[in-house]
Every structure is written in structure tokens, then in C-alpha cells.
Length: 202
Image 1 (cartoon, rainbow, N blue to C red):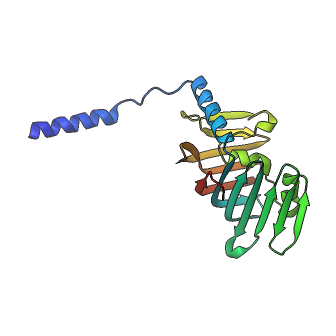
Image 2 (cartoon, rainbow, N blue to C red):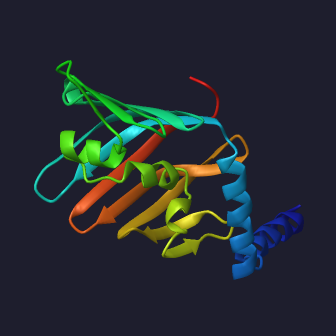
Image 3 (spheres, one colour):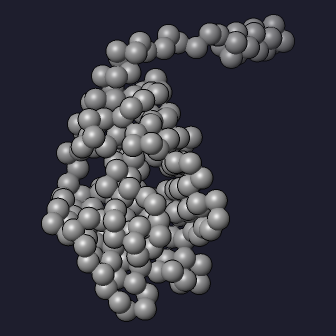
């Protein structure tokens, strides 16, 4: 019995020390990314609930973010601690509408300009809707730099002067989606920790 015991221990130790399997080539990683891009781009309904934090080096804030996308339109609801700084942003191809906690409503044709003007967030929302899914925004021709993990998910991407780093992915509906990311441009840092993903109408 003792000899069998030590034989089993030896096998387990050898298995633990075995070298990892061969990594994918750059071409294989790029193909995995392209396949993943096509799959996620086809989702008409998707969204998440998580915690968003932003710091520009002088001021910052954080709170709960609920993001729901239906086709070409999206609704973002933000609520800070104790309900402070709450707002709801609705976007469509033709306009963006922002409702603030004081009851005022603002509209503009550009969502990024509206967010910057009314909330003071230097965040490219149009690009962020792709980055949160672990994809480069295709409207600018793709990422300036893209570092891929073995499964085709980005470890880091650079686009429009921003650097987006991913340190955790979660499995949802057969896809690997970001669980945590950090987007940086100069002194501006945006952190997102996703609590739950969904890809059905909400």
C-alpha cells in the first residue's frame, strides 16, 4: 500500500511540474480575436452592472453603472454614493440625451461632447462601449496597439491616446468578457469592475 501511495504522489508531482502546453502563434491569437469580435458584434442586446470610478488627478468619483444596449441605442444609468451625482444617458445614432438628478435634461448630437460638457468626464463613451467588451473601436480603424492573450482576449489595447488594461475576464454565454479594466490617458483614470453581464433585453 505504501508503494502505491508513493507512486501516486510521484505521478501528481510530475504532472504539476510538467511544462505548459504550446502557446498559440500570433496569427492564431489574431484569428481568435477576430472570431470573438465577430461573435460579440452580432449581439443586438447586451449590458452589464458594475462599479465605475474616475479620477482626473484633481477630482474623482465612483458609483454603480447599469449599461444596457439595444441595437444602435444604449441607456447608461449612474448613481454615486448615497445617490449623489446620479444621471441617465440615452444614446442613439442621431442624438444623446442626458437627464440629471436635479430634473434637468440636456441633448446634443455628440454623446462624448455632452458627457464632457455636463458631467465633466473626459471619457470617449463611443469607444468605451467597445472597450468594455474587450474590443477595439472599429470606427478609427482599430487599435494602435493590441496585446492579446492566448485565447484572443486583449491584455492591453491602445487607441485614441488611451491605454486600456484588462486583468480579469469572466465567462458569459460562451464568451470571455472583461471583469475588470483600467483605461488611462494622462492623469485621467477610469476603472470598471463588472458585477454581472447579460446579453438579453432588459
